Image (cartoon, rainbow, N blue to C red; front, side, top):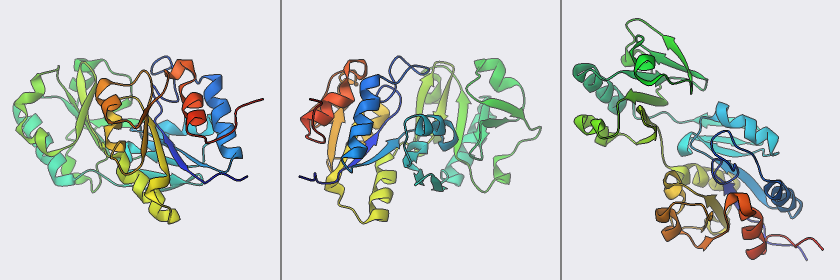
Length: 262
C-alpha cells in the first residue's frame, strides 16, 4: 500500500547534525532519510546557513532541495532558484548608526564565504574565522543593490545602544558579535510548496533551536528534537528523542512515514 506523500524539512545543526557545529550525522538519520525517499516522500534541508555553506550537507546526505538563508533562499532539484536580500534601506540605516557610534561591522553581498569589512576593526574585535574577511577601504553599503547579511561586533547587551536594530532580523551565535540575517524559514517552505502546488498540511518540519520557531507556525506538523529549546518544544506537535539518540528515525516511525526494519 502506497503512503501519502509528505514534504519534510530538516534543520541542520542539532537536528540532522549531532555534536555541535562541526559534529556528525548519526547513522540512524542517514537510514531514515533513505527510507523516506524510498517511500516516495519529499525531503529538504531548512537552514539559516547561507546556501553555499549548506551545500556540503546537501551533497553528503543526498538532498536535492533546500530552504537556505533563513528562508530567503530556495534550491530545487540541485538548482538555486534565488536568494532574496534583506531590506536594503533598513540595513544601511543600521550601518550608519554603527558608524556614528563606533561599532565595527561587515557585510555579505553575495553567496560566498567572504565578508566585506571597511578595515581591520571587525577581526580585531572578534578574532572570527567563520568567514573570510576582505578589507575594502571606504566600504559603503550604499554601493550594493543587494545585501544578504550584516555583522556587528559587540558583546551581549551592547546591541541595545542601536536603535535601528529593531527594524532588522538579527540573532547572536557568537559572544563577540551578532548576525543580521533572515529568520523566516516558513517563507521558504511556502515557496517550495507553492512551486509544487502541494498542500501546506502535508509539510512536516524538524528543528531544535529558537531560530526554528519561524517554522513552527501551526500550518503543518512540527517535530522538536529531544535536545530542542524549551520554547520550541512548547510549539511542537511532537517531541522526539535527542538527535544523538535516533531522534529523526524515531519520529518518522511514530508518524508512520515508513515501515520499521524487520
